[in-house]
Amino acid sequence: QFYTSTIQDRSLRKVRLENHLHHALEQQELILYYQPQVHIESKEIIAVETLLRWIHPTMGLISPEEFIPLAEEAGLIIPIEKWVLKTACTQAGIWLKKNKTLKIAVNLSARHFQQSSLIETITRTFEETKIDPTQLELEITESTAMKDPELTIKILNSLKSMGVSISVDDFGTGYSSLNYLKRFPLKKLKIDRSFISDITSDQEDEAIVSTIIVLAKSLHLEVVGEGVETKEQIAFLKRLGCSIVQGYYYSKPLPGTEIEKILSKGFLT
Ligand code: C2E
Ligand code: CA
Ligand code: CA
Ligand code: CA
Image 1 (tube, helix red, strand yellow):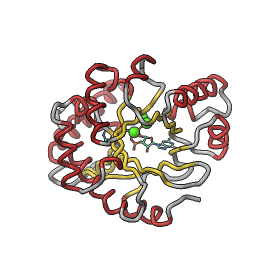
Image 2: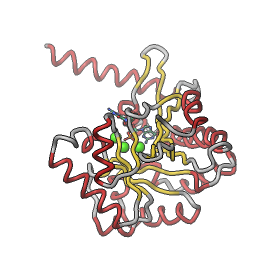
Image 3: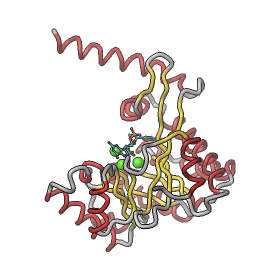
Image 4: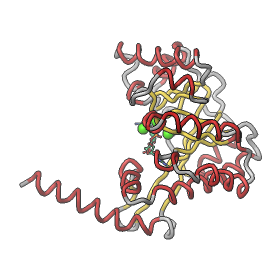
């Protein structure tokens, strides 16, 4: 009885969300939060990652973990991510006037990454927002990159020739071939939070993180530790050779107005 009602509740919630998601964009219920990537040594903010939020009129704040899969199923992910790209780049254009070296990172779904109009969408975004292509970082997961590796190489080369850089998100959680990793023109590997959370106590996690850092360096990639929450994790990552982190320890994802206050200082404490 208990289980059936839970499953019913869940599918009811899903249907309610899915039905309303069609209107979320036009009704301006989607908003962007931003989380800094921080250089451990200088405490400088080198990039901000754009993270989508949905404020549902009656159900409140909905996590992207919940509604992005629904948007993908409903075929709404591309219009949503086009909006994210444009809004994030417009915002970045304002911040970049003061922080010339700041990068803006935007997550890209597999479907959007493989969409034939992606390059055109991005070109138009640059025309409309006037940001420099070198200030945009696109984050794709390992599984997105590995869906069709030869196609990925083509797309990544086009993006690279525009000046856009690419990060591999949630690194370590998916399957990726070292052979392709070498052939993909990448800029950054982001080590998934699941390896970072117990890094100070779990020797296997330590070994994995340490290996990813060595791998990144030998491929001349920057490496970012995701989801850092404690001073100890930061000290540990630093000792292993990782110099950039992102996580609650420095800042949770925040609305643009809040991030702007932090950015105007230029560094975190
Ligand atoms: P992600 O790209 O791996 O983003 C990092 C997630 O970890 C964010 O969750 C962030 O709030 C959370 N996080 C950061 N630091 C910490 C920490 O110290 N501790 C803990 N416990 N969590 C931390 P969020 O914002 O809920 O986003 C979840 C996922 O939704 C993202 O994971 C990303 O995969 C996806 N997402 C968000 N925005 C977009 C988007 O515009 N497009 C696509 N395709 N996916 C998006
Ligand atoms: Ca990400
Ligand atoms: Ca991630
Ligand atoms: Ca994640």
